[in-house]
Image 1: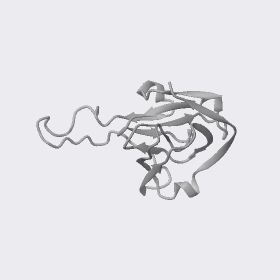
Image 2: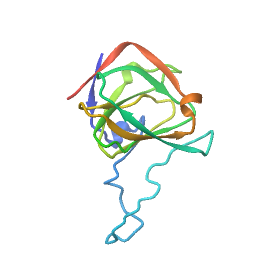
Image 3: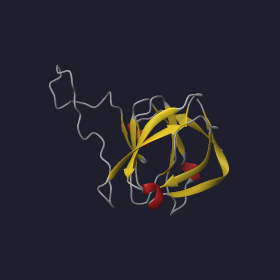
Length: 163
């Protein structure tokens, strides 16, 4: 099984979450001529179990373009992004606590962009597109990786194909 990397667009990603391109945020709260433009509350994230937010840096090194595992959070949405280069990542819908591998899609996450992944959507760390490591950010409640992270290994890897 293989998946081609898709462009990240609001409509095609909507079943899995939301997209934020920081260069296209609409109107700022400041006058357009001011040197600092502030765009508050452009991506909201639901935390049903806590109000403690954790900002977690993530370093992604080159690895084979194969999805070999996936994870989901039942009580929490996850925000990832702000990478210093383009990366790609997979998402897939849930079938009663199991991944719907037929639904898996791989999206390009452009440098600097952000995505919010809904609760119960299967996903895992992005892949770099070249031989350079990428640095970005994951936003979750503190300790989600220990108390709301359900991982599944794939029996057959899904190959990611560059278009």
